[in-house]
Length: 180
Ligand SMILES: [Zn+2]
Image (tube, rainbow, N blue to C red; front, side, top):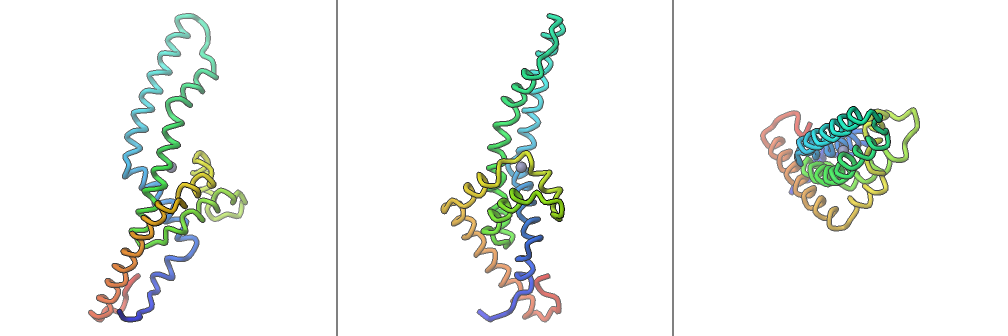
């Protein structure tokens, strides 16, 4: 094993890139787990429920109660989206690791996004995007479980090894730009 310095790995470590890797990992995690398809079915049930409520209120002349509507939304939409987010966090962690981003950074990112409500944040839009998500503490605790992190770290070391091999091959072949 030769000792080639890997500029690409230094680049991976910058905070901004890690934030983006974590957030994209989470979002792709939703896609991989087909949550959007599930969410569609839930919305359909919610719409049917709302139509029943509205039909009932039209029949009786009593307007639908906002609390009733809220309760329906809570029952159908919320609990599942919380568990979907947990699943997306987990899949995102493994995806991030397989793309050679250090998975140990993900809990730090969630913690940071949780704390950081300062207006000077470069990632204010992510704060907004994640405002409906579970608290950072819950997510950090779930991702920091030894079994979860060990699995991610195994994937990460294989990914790093593969990146290193690709770079070595690239340099051996005499290309000028390797690893970018
Ligand atoms: Zn999510």
